[in-house]
Image (tube, rainbow, N blue to C red):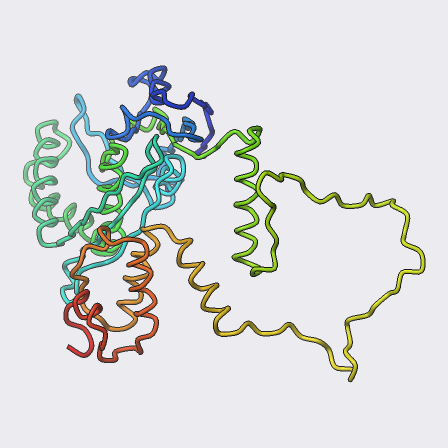
Length: 378
């Protein structure tokens, strides 16, 4: 059974290089995955580094990896494996990667699939690495690759005497057929995984596949988190204010905030406190006419304010994924502009405009006409 555990919560001092903590891990005993652009970075205020170890099972029955090929190893062959989606999620959580995917082919060719993946990773100074990669999956090209691979493997086994020469053509044909059946069946998932792996390679140097023996070594991943010193009075006040702001976003402006410099909290009475004498008991369960009271419905302005707060809480990958989903729902064409270069506010404006459009209705807003090609109304 796969396990994941924290090996070290290394709280390196601000301004120092936190990735020196990885020097204690021997590359011959660990698979070390580290963002290359962040190796020389220095920790920003309030950021700490933790190192986590993730072990991945080589037992196919565990459904953590699957075979994608094989390679010669000595006098035999060794399986090449890659990761199932659940395993990728565990590795992403350990490294602090957020990612989203979308299918970008027109789905007219059943032999071809293409996915785009975008991922973000927090660096030591609090800024983000962003990577966007695509993966095409053409069954015609893949079949030719499979034929070449199986031909080499069968001929190698003939030399070893494990297959008779007269059975060469049959062995190649049957092996290719079995492998291609699996690839056709899972072509969408394989393509999506390939796009994700390309993003992971750009962010943390992960390979697209590993020899199965490499899984005997745990994966070691550094992660950057914002964890300021809560004992600092200024930091404590900032965290409390942030908590009240979050409360206001959920419950409205009635949620109070503390005055500057005040970090007090209200004290609740103990359970055994003396009851207030002659306290009037008010039953609000029934109104004057005997009907049950119901909560007042939010006004349109309040709903819009809450919705805007929800959109602002989305990260870049979630905003782009939402735009892609709305584009598909509204029957719009391919996105022409680079959404990664747009600001968060610009992406929110696009989302709000898309939400107002009826399904397959003509686009009237010039910004949307410049953003999407084809689609309804063009």
